[in-house]
Image (cartoon, rainbow, N blue to C red; front, side, top):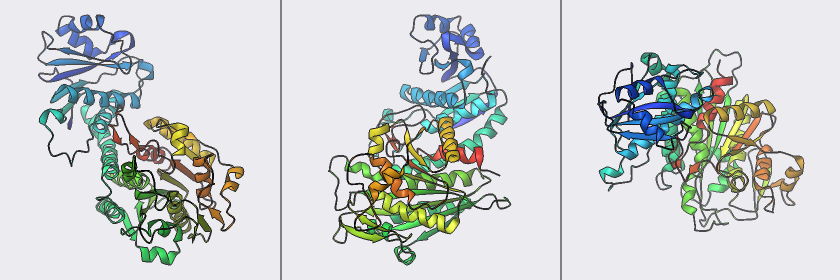
Length: 499
């Protein structure tokens, strides 16, 4: 789908899209279209359930007096509450509605109207941003689709006074879209396509944007003492990798310490010897979503030339029940020197992160570390798919993360850390065990496990198990891989950590 910005003009074909506020208050563009078609829009509104609320839409077909095939009315809600996220959602809904209607071209009129706090050029850019996000589709393996099954919308023209300014604002947002699409693609791919070596290759592709990329092999990780990570991958024929990405966008900053992001990259998780049930195991292709988000985030920062020094690390393994697989009861030594009793090989993500986090803090001495992981089913029980669970040792960082999540629509809920939970991870045979031994507080005890490997660095852990994959469409996220966390972390950096 092509996005075009243009100065306001009367649409000559396709669909004209205009906004309507609550209580059926027409925007100026809607008023003008209504005048041209002798009140057809007003009459259509009067006999419909459309009230102008944010989820409302109404299509008026072939209105007399206009050259367009239809007029699509989009509810915008209350003017005072219409913000950037509201325009993004409107853009996504427009694309979904027109693709479903078989339309190929549309023109959206942006004239914010009285009471709207956001300027028209910014509104236009945000609407285009939402439209692009919603237009994503992973269809590379669909070879027999009929034309009517494919998205129809080819061109979306956004008519706004100050089109050039809107285009410039959108250019930066579009770099984030490209990064989101990379993450969604990576997470959507099957495990026979994305495995540790090929996922590392995806990271290497960022070198053309100026990201420095290193890939550590099993031999190098063994030399570093990464027994926890290597233990997870020892049952697979696919060798593990640790990918290290550096974006040095602030070479003159007074504080040269980078911000750091660590992702769980289990490219397929059978559970190992503690094997999972067959039902739903195919979903475990996206158990590497944390690392996928980190790779996408580094692409976003490099793409928009963010003035920040950032490190991204992904621990990449495949968890398989091979003849050399890790057994329940095995004891491994992590890079930190702490020994871990592995009571359940399906609690593998925390083992991968234990070494990746320690490596990150030990080598880079970052300003903070944030890890992302599809870590526990327990967080889904607690929060469903509306919020990701957040754990943090730093109140300031936690507040910044929550605010960034609210701003982009990727919501976090802060969960507790406490010494009482930590003691549940004590082992009789080693320094720590990888599960608590019961079902209680499963997501919390996993976070407490990770906390032992972060030292004194300000740290946050995002358990994204419930938000990584969506079973339904939302305004800007079609069902499937969501790339949850990427826009949140990019916003965190933009708001607080760029020089």
